[in-house]
Length: 311
Ligand SMILES: [Zn+2]
Ligand SMILES: [Zn+2]
Image 1 (spheres, rainbow, N blue to C red):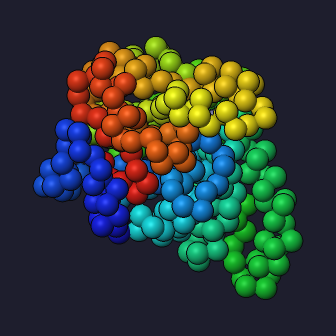
Image 2 (cartoon, protein in one colour):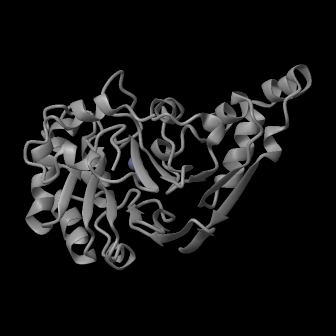
């Protein structure tokens, strides 16, 4: 199960937060749980600190995973989710920090032992990517099918591609819809909204300030939104040879805290969760610095996300 100690350590520095940890745990268990698996924006891998992007929802104990950056398998296990329980994977867009572990995750679920069915949803290119992974591992997979009597994993995965926003999935527990957001130069970048019986949750994916999200996130209980802290970016790129180009990309493709607050306020969400931090590995940026800009425009509850935090 979820490691409460880690959560408590992770929130110990939230001196300004409107929500105290004991308030979180005094609530009744929810049938829709959100667990942040990886909260660092970008593909770089660190030996410590935040893991690459992935957000888990458990709806009636069924996992719905949004994005699977590097390390997602380990983070799922750390959250207490056996990999063969994976059932639905949603990819927001085709930057590698959001799907580098897609194939490996499916593989890891398969090798865990029980036959699975995984439905993967995402922008065009998803099917090809899944097939390419299976080709990459063809020798191993074919060997294990014969040598270990395993089922063929290629038949256990269904890739659902789309290039328009709208309904993604509907079952008796949840309705999942998507919204096109702004993440140049990538044209197909989507936010997802999960409307379950007890909660509505919106995950922005990667986006620049996108007023479309106001309507899409209207009245949601929880908005998990990406965020970029400009002074941190300036400090980061100073050291890089491609600083000018990288700065232009980041400014065009991500959202500043003030703008995140504006979206949350106009959408009227109850709780704003900051995640996909850019830069995600600068420990000198405090939680208060991440949240202050958003707080200027949003008076509701703000949570500065941490890996393995449950909301
Ligand atoms: Zn990203
Ligand atoms: Zn991206």
